[in-house]
Length: 242
Length: 385
Ligand SMILES: Nc1ncnc2c1ncn2[C@@H]1O[C@H](COP(=O)(O)OP(=O)(O)OP(=O)(O)O)[C@@H](O)[C@H]1O
Ligand SMILES: [Mg+2]
Image (cartoon, rainbow over all chains, first blue to last red):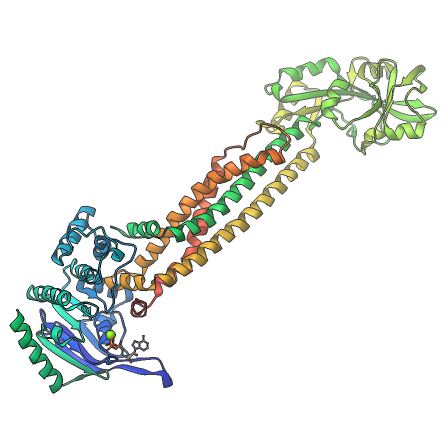
């Protein structure tokens, strides 16, 4: 059964000579609880696809449905509400609000929900503990390492317990050990029923996913033998190290 | 954490920017408060002086004939022998409800006399009350005694009179004790004597032709005083000298509109500071706004964060600016005021207006930046990260 459905999505940035086609007719379905990795060369449209799936970027053509809800037929406010209720985001670069502590950053999605102050602190504390940041709640982003910032961003994405997690290169700026921690966390979230869509350049990370979408020039490449082979090798390595 | 907390935390952790906006608005409010309270205090002072000096109520005999008009009087016109007020009746003014507000009562007797074959108006005046009623009167010489007169400047010129001259009037020999310096008013045309002497010369013992009253009307409208005096003197006609009252009002209005104009200008400048700073702040926070939107903040909620910030800032600026302005006014008061040891008047209406104006300027100036922030395309905003 399809939970998430993309139908012939196209997106072109700019006009005339400057026009750049980022998505050229992308279709797929994703079932609830799937862990999907998106790979592809730089500029192939991965981030664009993710922002469309995140209800942040209106496609030129095509449809995007979640639970049979036509997302881009919704009003601005309804789309904001959809993001609040359905989505957790981890962005390509560190994306914490600099003047808020880690706990306050994690609490951001709760700021627009009705709940008590104590409840917000409790949920934020739990989420931070899950990513191994217990005790660093009151630090500012500038007072922790890059890996810790990225983990705080993951904590913020999951504090709401959203059904869908969208991650754009969550390990792009991290060392191998920290990357592995993050991936293990995502695997656990996936096993709890969260639908995860992750863009990555690292075959090792993609190996954690249950399914791979390869992008090239704004389209999904049916099957990329080279990529598939690399993936298989990595999966074997990952299994060996586990 | 709520939207309000986000705004507060941003202010707390970006102190320099917040301080800049705060200072801009605060200086604006302080300038306004200092100006307004100075104007108010000085106005009050001037008002007090105006009321203390100069007649503002005129009591004349009730008459069926043409109205007696001292200001526009023409010699050889109607006679003054019609009706007069009994001097003894004037004691009743001391018993009116607002008697304490009466600064001076100046009875005056008027009559035509002939000096050197010219007709002149002789006025008997109570010289003590004249000091209050006509503080601008200056006599070159002495006040007139029982056998003396003081001509107005014009009368002295036309009649060729100077201090020490002797003049015959109504069959008496009188001495000129001094000459009234030019006043630019009808007074220049008259001859003045003491009230008692004039009454005798004019054969009007115990009678007065008109009474000028100076009333301090700080807490009672002049109309109330008029009504009270009318009741005390049923045989007389009592009226407020409108031109005096209107003149005062005009002075006050000028003061007020000047400080109001400057205040609005300053508020506008304060608003501009807020506008520019908030515009910069929104630009700087583009990535952050993208995060808010991605997390599910509605456009209205993003706007609320920005507006809450400027609301809190401008509220603080209003309160602090008010206090600062009072202090500045207090310090500046001695430079403008002659009355030493005066104090700025504390006016709750001004306090409210200052805070309200600060908040209005701050919030209105932030509306556009807040709107811009809320309209940012979330996808584009996130690329700023
Ligand atoms: N806002 C934009 N305006 C103009 N062009 C854009 C915009 N965003 C993306 N593009 C272009 O669209 C294409 C796809 O960009 P996108 O960011 O989706 O690629 P990507 O696969 O995420 O690349 P990377 O791996 O480097 O992050 C690129 O050619 C890019 O230059
Ligand atoms: Mg990208």
